[in-house]
Image 1 (cartoon, one colour):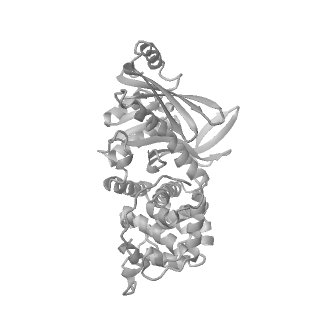
Image 2 (spheres, rainbow, N blue to C red):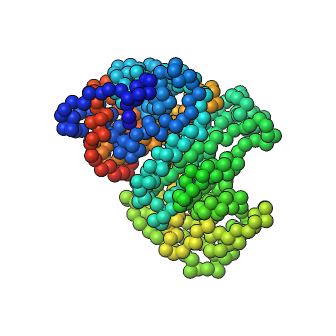
Image 3 (cartoon, rainbow, N blue to C red):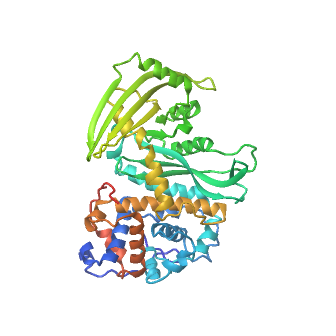
Length: 474
């Protein structure tokens, strides 16, 4: 992270002659937390500030104090520290040594006020902030950090799903979606997210599409329409990325299959009993005639005995409502878990896919493909709603600012995952901190109280550590 001054030029920082001897061991615990965080960000993404330099700034440049990168990182730190509201920036990030830390790490005169962020963001383009997030994800892909997590050694697993972010009994804005049940109307906002998910718990934000009414269309916007928009944007930003899309049963249908096929994507879509009736009927009829398409598997999950029974059918012909023909395979997995207490539970899963299913790949497609769709719900939406990020909080009444705050929340979530799952963090805090909320609290306390020596960031960039990702244990 370069050190621009308030006017945009480089600031002067004196580096002691013995700076090359400063190591993580020399730092007290709170300074170490900040050092590991900033080194982890530098290690994977380089100078993150540069990703915000290209964002158009409509403000009068001669009068501004804070650059776009300063504003963005203030919002990101608000989410990382779990402040939960914009007004807490003035109450908590300004206090203690917060202003000194901001000058040291970002080169700004102090920490900007939350209202300053809101006012500036209301005039900027959310798509440009989304591009900054895509650049960060591209860094991880380019450095092959995510290669070990590819499905079948090739495909990046992208989960796509929607969630609500705001609910009101009265209309919040003209863009509100509406739902009427038993004569009562609920006004809400929602987003469709695409996240790169992995078996050990990563849910890396990739793209956000806002579901909202334009006011010019008699029909309400919906998750399905948003899926088409987000798919096009992912393809535009990552044209050669080998994608395996794992999707909820809401999207099971010919148009979604067609989009994925045109983009060269593989897909696994949840197949419910009431969806695609002809496909379900063909599966049951043909499965009875293909006893060779069966596989049983058993293993121990701790003290729990897990038994899985797979069956699949290849080459089912399906014609959608637009008279487009598709050829798909269907997988069914019956899973029984026998606990040490003797309790037995059985669950049934079924997917439709454009992959050629066989005895060699059916287990991986099911367990590391279709089954991982829930990661976007748990490690994604649930963490952002209940882990201190405040996904359902109204950070701004400006529609434009609210979108930018949401995208910066995704960047903060990405940085938190990179920090807490990295081997450098595990090395110095082997016992962990119990939860993401505790990490946020400790990061906030370090920001407010740590004594950061001058030129510390230059010291950090001279460190040389290899960081590998470890399974989440929080």
